[in-house]
Amino acid sequence: MVERIRAIENEALENITNAKSLSDIDDAQIRYLGKKGLLTELMRNLKILPEEERRNFGKALNETKIKIEGLIASRKAQFSAQLTQNKINSEVLDITLPGKFIKRGKLHPITQVMDEMIGIFIRMGFSIAEGPDIETEYYNFEALNIPKYHPSRDMWSTLWINNELLLRTHTSPVQIRVMEKQKPPLAIIAPGRVYRRDSDVTHSPVFHQLEGLLVDKKITFGDLKGTLSYFLRQVFGKEKKVRFRPSYFPFTEPSAEVDVECVLCNGAGCRLCKNTGWLEILGSGMVDPNVFKFVGYNSEKFSGYAFGMGIERIAMLKFGIDDIRLFFENDLRFLEQF
Ligand code: FA5
Image (tube, rainbow, N blue to C red; front, side, top):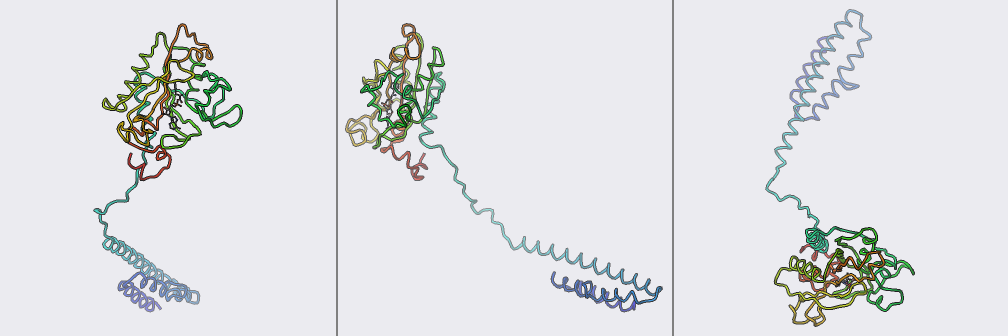
C-alpha cells in the first residue's frame, strides 16, 4: 500500500514540476487531491485497514498530501509571478505621449472687468455695499426723487412684478439703503445686476452697473470729476478720448454723463455709436438735496456725489466688442478669447 502511495507521489511531483501552465497545475490538483482524486480514494481505504497498518498508511498518505500541496502552491506562485512579469514586459508605457488636456474654466469677461473696476475704487478707499435685485418702487424711484406719475420715470423701461415690486432698473436704490443705515462721511460702491425692457447692440435687458456714492463735508463737482477722471485713466489709459457731457437725473443736480470714443470707428461715426462717435458709459452728479431729505441727512452740512456705470459698455470699449449681446450668448468661441 505504501508503495502505491510513493508511486502516486512520484508521478504527482513529476507532473507538477513539469507543468507548463496554471491550468496543468489545476488539472494535477484535481487528479491527486480532488474529490475523486487518487489520494482521496486511498484515504477512503483507511477505514477498512487494520489498526497498525492504518497508522503507517495514514502517516504516509498525509506526508505525501502535504508534499503535493506544497509543490502546487509554490508552482502556482511561480506561474502568477511569471504572468505579472509578462504583462509588465508587454505593456509599454510611453511617457512621451501627451496627457489628457483638462480645460481650465475662466472668469467671464464681465466678471473680469467688474473685478478690475472694484479694485480701483477699493484702492481709493471706497467700500462695497449691496442691495436686492427685486426692489420696491420706493427705493428704485420715490426716495430717488422720482415721484409717482412723474414723466422722469419713463427714463427707465421698468420690468414690474406688481404695483409695489419691480426688478431694479439701476443700482441707485443701494444709495438710499446705505444712507438710511449709515451716517456721513461715507464712500461706497455697489456693483450688481440691473434689468430693463431694452435690447439692441448697446442695450441688454439684463446688464450690470457699478454705483458710487460719496458724502462728506464740502464735496464739490471737482471731486466727482477728479475721481472719475482718475478711474477712466486707470481703465482705459491716457490715450483714450473721454468727455463729460451735461445731463439730467432726478436724483443729482448738476448732472453729467461720460462718453468714451467709440471702439469700432474711433470717433468717425458708425452703427455702434449711432453715428455720434461716442459711447455713453456712465451717469453722475451731485446728490440732490431732496434725496438727502428722504434719508434724514442735513444738506446744509453735507454734500456728495454719485455715479452709475454700465459695466458691459466699459467691457465693450476695453475689448473692442461691437455687440453687447455677445456677453450673454455664452458661445465658447467668444468666451475663450478672454
Ligand atoms: C442710471 O441708471 C443712473 N442710475 C446712473 C446714475 C447714478 C446717475 C448715480 C447719477 C448718479 P442710465 O440709465 O443712464 O443712468 O444708465 C447708466 C449707464 O448704464 C449708462 O451710461 C450705460 O452705460 C448703461 N446702460 C444703460 N442701459 C443699458 C442697457 N440696457 N444695457 C447695457 N448698459 C446699459
